[in-house]
Length: 122
Image 1: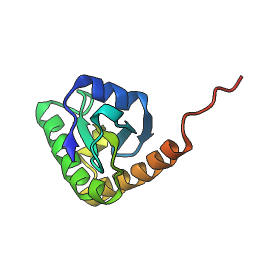
Image 2: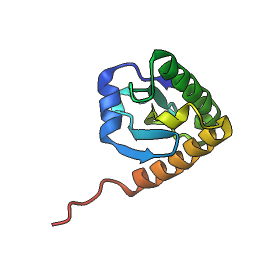
Image 3: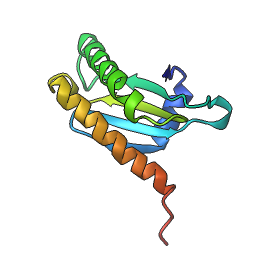
């Protein structure tokens, strides 16, 4: 797993598919072809001030990193960028619940991505 560090990568993921859960929001998009490495996925973590002060945001990101480390190698798809966004419940949810939320969000995201872009209804 590689980490997203450039703002443009986070914005690209935000413009892709989004799945909201109880304890986190998952944003995903295909990795651009020029940055794609065989079977590698990239992941980023973010927490806004809505989550709490700096200590709370850092704790939320640590918990999301641990959940991603246990779930993404099993269920993540290579050639995709994932951004985990903390929600206020990220701090209080039991770790098993956090892992369940991430697993469910990954399944929903992959279903959305496999369908392709939505057609404009006119």
